[in-house]
Amino acid sequence: MKRKILSLVMMGVLTLSVVSSTQVQAADKKAPTLSTSSKKVKVKKSFTLKLKKNQAKKIVKTTWKVSNKKVALSKKKKMSVRVTGKTAGTSKITATVIYKSASVRKKKKLTCKVVVKKVEKATSTQAAVSTPTPVPEATAAVNPTATPSAVPSQNSQVTKEGQKISTTGIKNARELGGYKTTDGWTIKRGLLLRTGSLSEATGADKKILAEDYNVGYDIDFRSEEEQKDAEDPNLGNMERTSVPVELSKYFYLNDTQEEDDNCYAKMLKDKEVLSAFSKFFRIVVDNRGNQAILWHGVKGEDRTGLAAAMLLSVLNVDQDTILEDYELSGAFNGNKMNRIKLEKAICYMEQQSGSVTNFVQAKMNLTWNEISSIRMFYREREASSLVDAAEWIDKLDGVSADTEQIVVVRGVGGTNADVGFYERGGDHKWREIFTTYGYIGRSGFQTDKREGDGGTPKGLYRFTHAFGIKEDPGCVGLPYKQVTDDDYWCGISGSEYYNQPIKKSEIPSVKVDGEDVVVDGDNSEHIIDYDPGYAYALNISWNESGEKDKGSAIFLHCFHSRMWTGGCVAIPENLVKYLLQRMDKDCAVYLDA
View (cartoon, one colour):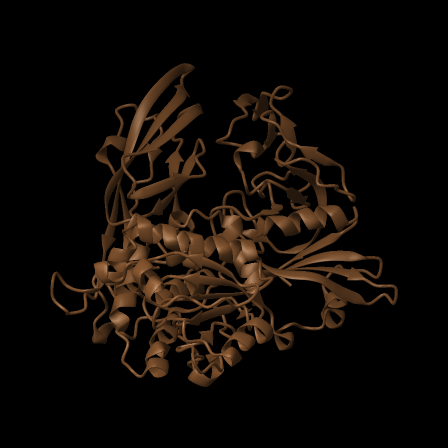
């Protein structure tokens, strides 16, 4: 354990230290307390702060509050809260506990000081210390003052020949297709094009764009003056959208002609610029991969390059590739690109939101389902990376010859997973209906699943309940229930209703060890509160018997605001809806194939 903590310190990342306040030492020795041990975790990674019951007869209620936004609290329960470091600084967590001691109802405030701090980078003598496994982007550590870290490219995948579009009048014409992502996908060819000005496009260039690439959208980032001086040509059915960004306002230091390395970061603080990029991303979302999208400036370097960098980040392309793609403009235009400008912009976005993707989601007014749809429609699996389903599904433990449908969730690292839906054909061979990417529990797959551990249980299961906040989409395999404010999923371990759906109007409290425990959002899942995650959902048959502390509420549900779950499996909303409309009642689900 000491070696693990030491390696975290020497990584040069932000860490989170937790030191309990001296206030937890109560005069009443029977009073509950908070843990007194310190804890260090990477920023953006979570840990559980627990309440110790001590000799208190019963904890009636615990209210958790935090003094500022340096940390975030989630999964608030009577005996614990999930704490996530957000930005550098100090915060205070307050737990107001109502408890019973000797049949007397008492109240106590406990506090915990939380320090999110930066640790110095490792020196050369520290290089031998082993490093922890990288965490997914949404929970990755961020040092806002340093050059942004990246998942290193195995070998550079950025080449002029590999990306170019063979135009003569349009400069710096290339595409993003072919780049591989960190979660094992590839950007589709021919859909995402970045270029310089189109004003000098030749007849042959126009034909290439219209016929070879089926370009449906021309997004012009040039200023109004630049567009007036050199108008884009009419390219048939291509829809032109003007989103002017006045680059000269940010490009130079004061009144000099010296480039400002912070110019992109300054652009991202301007509401008008953010509005322009929001329109760009809205077209990307709404197009759904049906036609090619082309965006450009004058030379296709700065505004075009920044848009490309943000889009590549959303698509989960590694940062080395993003920077190399940016620098490729130099090879096309015959000049040297200043990558520091993009590095500083990435650092700014990470500092503001934790990651570039989080920044885009928040500032471009996108939902997480829209972020997911971008990944779905502009990426694909290479045929060589998909194993023939017929070769391996029948070999999975527990899959019988009678199994006609199965959802297979395969972990691919961290909280990322491939999720596939398969059916047997008339020849009794398996056929893939769809494969998508998804997320699993923050602790990955677990062989010994316990309540609150954040893990997704391994094994072969089936679906037992279909439900959701939205109306019945036409569910055919299981009865569908549209939930109301009255619906909860009981998470009270030790009760007869543990891991079952209940109505609070009918079951306002449950018995645990002979005492009544009131059902609430702290000890059970108030389903209607989990929008959009539970827009549609299927319960997985884990712990059907309700064995104490073995875990509850393991669902297959829709994407929500995080790139991990508390133990469930999450995939895009439209595919959960599709499953409900197609799967039969005996559909199996295999976790960690």
